[in-house]
Structure formats: C-alpha cells, structure tokens
Length: 526
Ligand SMILES: [Cu+2]
Image 1 (tube, rainbow, N blue to C red):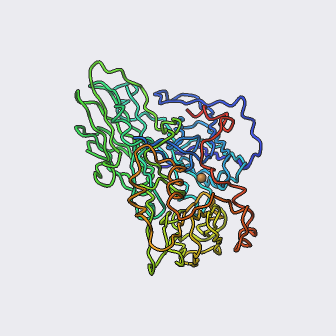
Image 2 (cartoon, rainbow, N blue to C red):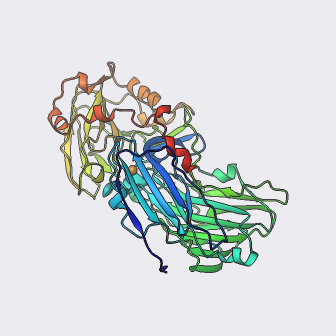
Image 3 (cartoon, rainbow, N blue to C red):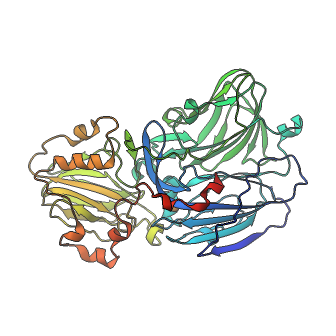
C-alpha cells in the first residue's frame, strides 16, 4: 500500500556539533483523532560499547544505542516529522538504518566515524512497526546488529486499528515486544545457534515480572522480531489473536490465528481481548531453538490487577553486575564456561577461525613448537575498516617471548604462526580491535585439563580478570604480564603501518563507562 502524500526526506548529513540543549522528545501514543496536527519529534541515539545484564546473573558485552539492548523505543504518529540525531561516542564506526523511512537513510546515517554526529529528518508517512539497527556499512552492519544494536520504531496509523474502531476506545494495555537473539561468538552467529533468545533484553523477563491485565481488557501488541537470524511464531498459550496486522499496517488485516510468523525484521500489530482470568504464557512456539532459551513471558490476568498501560521494548538498562556467573562476549573473551579453552596436542591441526568478528576458538592451548593457522571465514572482505570482514591477528599482551602479527587476510585466506616460547598470548584484530583471542603455549604435557579446571569455577567468580588470573596461574614459570609496548617486537612492522591500534583502542574498551560519558540527551528516549 502506498499512501498518496507528499513525501519529504529532508537532508541531514554530518553535523559535527549539535546543540543538545532545548531538544524535545515527545513520545506520542496512539490516538483516535484523525484531524490531529502533525508533531515534530527529536530523538537522540548514542552509539556505544557496553556491558549489559541479560538476566539470571549473566552479562553481555557488545554494542548499544543509549546503553540498552534493544535500544530506545520510538513512537510517533503518521504524518509527524522526525529528527534523528546519532552521536558516535565509541572508538569504532557505527551508523543507523531505520526501516520506517522509504528512502536511503544510509546516505545520512551510515558509517558515522568515531566522535562524529549525523542527522536525518523525515516525515513518518508509512504506518507500522519497524526495526532499526546499526549500519556502519558492509560486513559491519551484520556484526553490529548481532552485537546488540537494534530496536523498534513505531508509526501509529491515521486510521485506527479495527478493534479500536469497534470499541470506540484506545487499548487498556499496549505491549511493545522485541524478540531477539544473543550469540556467544561469530561462528554460532553464522550457524544460527543462539545462546539465548529473549523478549526485550532479558531472558524470561516477563516470567519473573508478569504483565498485569484484567479479563476483557483490550490488549494491543506491537511485536517485532529483530532476529538477527531466527523465524519466530508468537503465540499466547490459551489465546487466539483477534486481529492481526502484518507489519502493523491497518490494511494488512487478518483474523483469528493462533500465532504470527515473523522472520528477521518482520512485525505485527496484534489486537486481543483477554478472554479469562489466569496466566497466559507468551511464547515463540519454536520451543527448542527459541522459547526454552528465554523467549517466554507471562500475562497475568485477574479482576483486581494493577496494570501498566504501556510495556516498553527497551532493555532493562540496569548497571552491569560485578561478578556475573557467566559473561557473553561475542567478539571478545567471554567467561571460560562459554568460550571454553580448546586443548590441542602435538600433531593436531590447529586452526583458529576469524568469523563474525570473532576468533574461534577464542582460547587455545597449544604445545610449544605448534603451528597455529589463522583462517578468515568472514566472506564480506570488501571495503575497509569497520565495514570489512578482513582480519588479522596481532599479539598485544604476552607473558612469553613470542611476538606475532599476521598479514591482513581476505576471505578464505590463511596464515600460520609457529609458537616456540611457552606463555600466554592475547591478540586482537587490528582492524576490529574489540576482537580478542588468547593462546596458551605449554611445554611437555599440559599439566591439567584446562577445560575441566576453568569451566568448573565457582559460581559468581567468573569475571574476566579472574579468568585471566586462573589461566595465568597454570602457565609454567609465568613472569608478570608485560605489554607489547614494553617488549621488542619481532613482527611489529605490519602493526606500525596500520597505526598503533592498541594505544588507540586499549584493552578495556568494553568496561564500565564513566559517569561523564553518559550522553546528556539519552533520557529523551526513555
Ligand atoms: Cu554499530
């Protein structure tokens, strides 16, 4: 359906300095007034690296918009004007693709370099429930979306949805739900093996905190599957959806189905009258690959329920807990119970893949004298910088005497490094410095099974520092850790040619962010 309206995508482009003060965000909810005057909305999005809680004492290290995954929920009315200001305070390029615009938004919001701000203004002509996600360009679009940068943008239609017309009133409860997946590394991302699947940023979020409604309430869901990989079938146990609108477009109406099928970025508006008391369990009916991994919620229906009128889709935005029992870091080193050390013995064929902006296996224990082959499985090797899937492997911290830096590898290229000096070697990709791996070179027989030792760590002791200390503790004759800058480099020329990435980006780029880094405008989006 194409509305015949004057379409206006007003130019944006890079605006180095944006005056933040005085900006307004008006979060407009649905309205039945079709004569409503168009409003103007300004939304600020800050692209960041963050660590988030994703439920059950587990943290996730990745990229965000405004410190949450999903990012801020934005709601406007059809015909409103929207100004999006995207500030990149991170050290790598980001960007924004917003599906609510029938125009090439990447001309304005794609590939925003570190420290830059970009802007887009458009008229929200097309109603519906839309995805937005990071879009630095090329390979980086996929990697950053998997890394947590996605959210929901809703354009409420001029023409009220059917149930609203029939009842002559707005919904009692509006529930905005983003289903999305979390991956522990790029190999699982490629293969579609999600570690967790969730609604609105936390596993079983609405099982722990059920959504309160009353029998006969008029509920409207805004349901969006941000994937990035899986096809969901959203269903309420005990319910049949009354009216369903594919994409949230009023003209795309269906009736009376048990579920809605949503591939990545597919969405629906669903209208439903709560038929009874009792819990109604919200699930994606892909039980084994999705629901059982966290994509379950509960609608608690009772006559005296105290209900919130709106359930929002942003992630919880709580301060990351200090001692998570598990740490998921798709690009970096997660806790060793998920990024489990791979033990190689003399004679093994040792291959470390570069895939989905991660090294797999991220932790490898190899005998002294072993040859390790780095092999780039990322296919999108065009473009450069954050936009490319080219990778190298460059040692950045070591307690042994080996130094290495591979050439920059295109897809399906490989390079081997022989390790003769025992020790622990941390390495990164100099193009994507948040990619991190670790190789432990042992002499003789390994003196313990690292897998058993490390994954057997006590609950709540899984911080990265502690894991690192554990690893270091069984490396034979480990001297104190020494950074590469303090040691002679045997393969350093390649690194130097690309600039000193270690200095530019540092090790702890994903660590907690200081208060003064908090973006002034972000509360406008909450
Ligand atoms: Cu990004």
